[in-house]
Length: 246
Image (cartoon, rainbow, N blue to C red; front, side, top):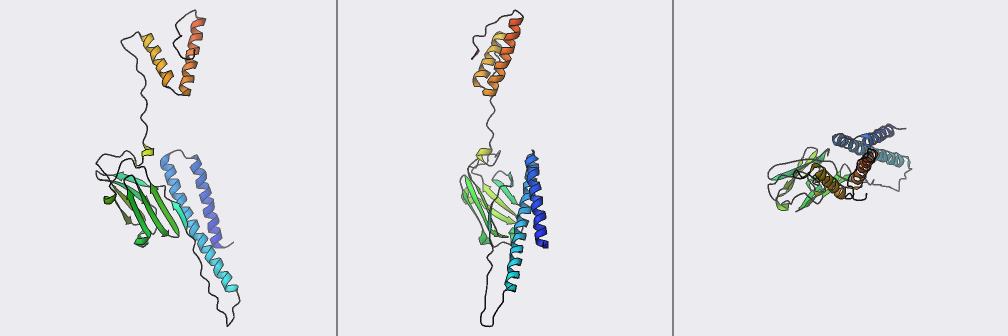
C-alpha cells in the first residue's frame, strides 16, 4: 500500500467516525462544527484520490514501450465534482443581510470569471466553478422578506465569500428563509372569571379537547375517565354529557 493510499484510508475512517458522531449529536452548533470538519476531510480525500490517479497514470505511461518512429501523447482529464453549500453564518444591519460562506480554501486565488452570483427579489444563486476541482452551488429561494437585486452583491475574501442581500425595507429579519420561521404557538383557553369555577373549568376542557391534537384528546379522555371512576366509587355525581365522546 502506497503512502497516498494509507492517507486516503485514514481520512475515510475519520469521515465515517464523524458521521457516527453526527448521528448521536443533538445540539445544532455541535452538528454544524462536525459537518464543517466532515466537508474538510471530504475535500482532502478528493484531492488525494486525484493525486493517486495521476501517479498511477504516470507509472503506467512510463512502463509502455516506445519506438523511434511513433510518439504517443496522452492528456489526463481532471474530473470535477459538484457540491451544494449548506453551511453558512449570517448577520444583518439596517440595510443588508450578510451571509458568510466559509471554509473555501483558495477562493481568493480563483479567477473572477469562475465565481458568479445572481439575485432575485426572493432568492439568490452563488456558483463557484473549479475550486480545487470542485464546483460549489449555493441556491436559495423563499427568502423571509424581499431584497433589492440591483443593490445586492458579493465579496471574495480569504477562504470565504460574503453575500450581501440588500433589504427592501429596514425591518429586522428573524431568520433567512420563510421555511425557518416558527409558527405562532396556540394560546391556551382562559377560564372565565365571571362564571362558576367548575363551569369555567369544564368549558376550558371542552375547548382544549375540540382544538387539540390526537395526543391532547387522549390525555383529556384518560383524565376525564379516571375522574369519573373516582366520583362513582365515592358516590359522587356530576354532569358529563357535554364532553365530546363520553
